[in-house]
Amino acid sequence: MAPEHAAQVLAIHQAGIDEGNATFETSPPTWAAFDTAKLPDHRYVALSPDGRVLGWVAVGRVSDRCAYAGVVEHSVYVHPDARGRGVAGRLLGALIVSTETAGIWTIQSGVFPENAASLAVHAKAGFRVIGTRERIGRHRGVWRDVLLIERRSPVVD
Image: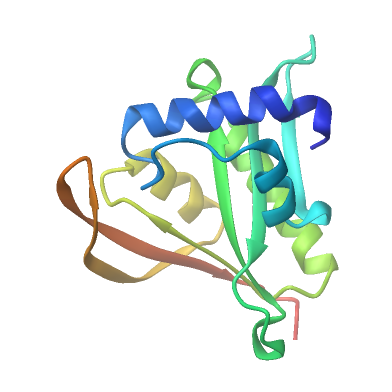
């Protein structure tokens, strides 16, 4: 992912926000805020043959405490027109390779239980549900649960 992808990355993020089952966010961050929050070595875009961004994945630190140095939280978004073609799975695969190479042992996230497609692609990539945060926040005036998912690396010790 590079700065020239910024507008498309943020537009895909906005599409996820608009659909209502991707995030509690109400608007995407600015590119500067996104760029600051996401680790540069672990963010990827999937591109069409003509260079359009089909989807993206990125991680941020969970904590600055040294005990959590190997734990990141990720987001993965796919353009609505590119869904069902394996884009998210390929992005998660690239993320897993890069994080394991860097010694990161846990990738985690929170997913709305209604987001069945996200839960399925994550399960296929080796993520598991580790718990439910019930009524953790209001989203569009409705209390929402979030499933906590994680992938523990089988190779990082």
